[in-house]
Image (cartoon, rainbow, N blue to C red):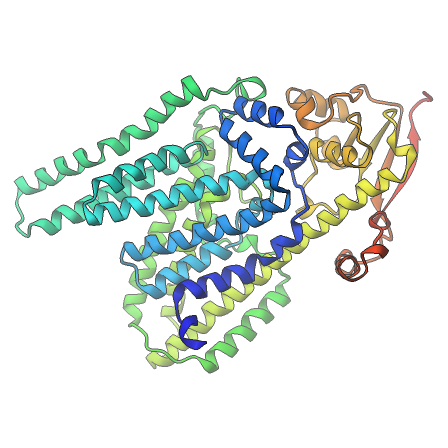
Length: 539
């Protein structure tokens, strides 16, 4: 059993599985725009995503839901692992050391970024990202093998992956990689140095990368004529608008992600205890040889440089449409799908530099400390992801309780009332959107006439009318509120957490146990209660 486990691929799969297996607890959960997908007809899905310029995504969601909603969790788990595995293969092809390639791949798998992968609406993004990294892998192989057929096939895959528009700015990475690979290939073909040779290599690189440069522009033309945005996605939706202030913000985000510690949600005491305990255990049972301190530090600087470039490319898609990337406390913005790669390089680079100055002279002991510290870091990040999944599971319990409360409360099923959610149980304190509440209401009553909003969100937009005016173009069948009366009614109910003195985590644990062992005893609505009606004037 020890020999197979020494394979890096198996170790990578084990760490990934240990980190993300809890996603299957969320097989029935819906987040953000998932409620718009849930139960939508094929015509609705195709129509909406055609308006967004991605008709294929509409068919993709229809096929997934035809099979069953549980397939989203399975697909996300498999797709994200394959992305990490192909990333490991790319590093091996680029001649990274086996241990370094494994460490980078592990960090990509467990970095505290892009929690939005949990949502079904983001599942196609993982699919297109997998196509993108697979295309990079085939491209690298084609250059090394001088195989034109594989090279052109990789270009076709790149064009297909561009349906996820955030990958178009990231395609600059392929250009940089192509210049590097073609330069190495030309340099290896001759040892003589001359000015004429340098001119020839420039011409060679330009000739070999011309198609790479042309591809994004070719896709832009195709998109303009065949995949043009319309309907609710027309006008100013994600239009290229680069601003100096946003570019400055991108620089801030790049440095914030050099070591994304803000994404760690473990308590400080628990984090420290996990790190120290794991480090101590691994230190006493590990013994390997290690390279010199100077080599480790030099490699660390190179890794940080690569990480900065990848982080910049990761945020570029957001910056190009005038949006300001920020290091959100809940890390759910979709542009972060490209950031784990840069964060992995920068984190490992900083880690190697820190370990290079350990006050230990014995190389064996230094390496044991390095390995132990890295495993301790991995343990912390794995535990952090379990807390993330736990938070989303608690939000799932809130969703069940919200629908169950409405279903068994006739007074909450009238369009003459506004229902405000003040339970405070949303994942990472993110405000639930109009579509989520409408979806919950529909699942409870079968009606599309609900006026439900998170309390803080309503205040932020100046009340219900302000919220409707801001997002009016997105209302209708897609958000499941097409029959709602948008004039402010006279009365409202306020939903809040039942038994407010009880710890929400203890409730989540007990609810999980009851659901698994005694499902007939589980009553979702016990988590919430409501007050009201509070009326401005009689109706």
